[in-house]
Image 1 (cartoon, rainbow, N blue to C red):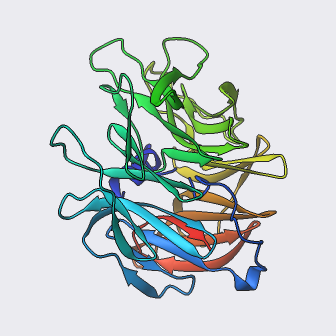
Image 2: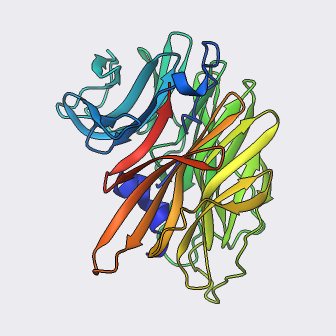
Length: 349
């Protein structure tokens, strides 16, 4: 299962990955916990509520990417079966009437919202309502579904540069808008001969960003482009030069000046363990169920002072069968559990 979490948002969507941590806090007053709604999105475009009931099947959805909320509304990005460009709002399709010069195949991934503007990442462009903003030098750029974050009308896109051939190493990348174009910043890493990748980002106060990913074999975040290597609980390393990361961050958020990063790390058996870093200190979110083989945190969301987390656990049953459990956490406690649902991410209304 090595590094499966890295590809989760790409495969059963990279893991992940906004994060509904991909948008500013709700514009409406913060609701009490018992009045909030948790919505879960599958890659097929099915939406489940907190009780596990399927409440919506998105029309003409070939592949769903990300769900976010704004007040009592929810928005979903993804690929339309007829190649249209747009998004789903509260389950209904909305077409963006953008005029592309080239006849390109559209695969919309990240989504964010600010005021009346919807932001979408449609390779290799950021779309804002009817506007098209190209990414410079995008030929080697790769990203996940949770690649886009917006704060006060400022949009950012993260991912990594992919190189082919021997002696090439990936760079983590942050795009930011400057004069109508999205220019590339290569995020720092300890040295040139290590891999780096960015999977998710959270922007706040317009100009501040937190980016999550890995460098070398270590989990990391970049806070305003400054690299911070996060500690791991298990001292696991590989000797080969181009080994996989021993841990990775695929979702980040911030509340009350606390920075949260989530993903997984390898234990001594090289199995993923769901890990949450709070201001750089690692802890594990585990159900404790018998037969737990591996786990990771798919996404975290800050809502007021509360922290929601969506995690996945692979369970080996005594009869030899296996289950995939999806868990919703609130401030470190499990509030909901589902079995064998292909969830890519979630949001809180």
